[in-house]
Length: 387
Image 1 (cartoon, rainbow, N blue to C red):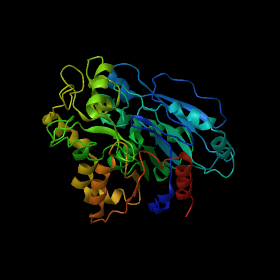
Image 2 (cartoon, one colour; image 1 turned 120 degrees about the horizontal axis):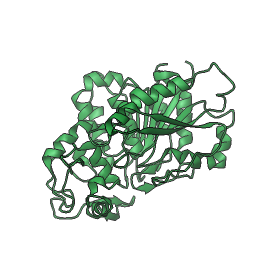
Image 3 (tube, rainbow, N blue to C red; image 1 turned 135 degrees about the vertical axis):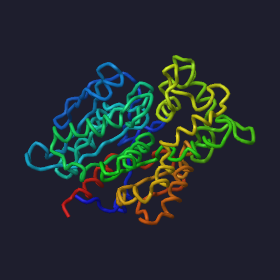
Image 4 (tube, rainbow, N blue to C red; image 1 turned 180 degrees about the horizontal axis):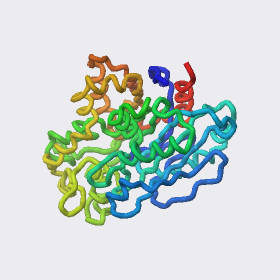
């Protein structure tokens, strides 16, 4: 099935567990705690576990990837029908068991079990890796999570369930999930037919929150000598600084630094940075002084989504036409709107082809304010209807 244009998605509204923040998802939040709880019993819910050969080889020990699969209400009745699949990526560190809270919402559960709900399979991916959230991508430190997803997990899902394949395969998420859903669409453009990205993590490292990771000398203080805030409310009032945030992560890491804290900066650094001689991710900035290592920062470029699309638009552009929808609050609590403004400005200037991506900014809205499972599911249902 050909992907339709995304203006239909403009009304989407979703929930997520955000980068270091919680919001509602049909009044529910994802959980970043490492303690796993079993999936609840539900006639439409199945647990999916797969021992990944590529991750097992990387880790030199059996490595199992877990997911939850929520089936549409009509799946068991029509044995021939094929269904679109939504790969949902949580906010930072969200576990696949987050589906428990979604199905515990009586309103959502009643709607999903009804005939009026869209007939879409949802795969809830697991945000658990050796350094925090693995971001579902290959990295020197966490391992080949991208290969595991694209070459192993998705084919196994397609083999086990009656899916539409690539033509009906979508990604979505908010915060970490917003960045991952967009990154997967851009890095594997022919493996997905659309992404629904809300409040994604920084899509340009020139605006890594308020840090220019390539040009600035220090991550903690700006050129005026002021500590950079990491979080604000929608009126601009700062809540805490990057220095304080990293200081807290330094206490969490076994190495005494944020690089193995398992928290947000540690997870970003583990994904983007090379592996050091000590076996740990090389820190992009000093854990206590904040001085940026520009040699390491240079190696972050391959994960910089704006650099990616601008360097290869003529080849990439045709492959992502009709596939990109992004929502961003213009008072994002973590200053993520700044990088997305640059991303949007580039796409607006594209030719050969002219990008048809839909990127919406909403005034006085914060991080993940407009994210809802229900609206995304409805939008995918509409796009997957026979033409």
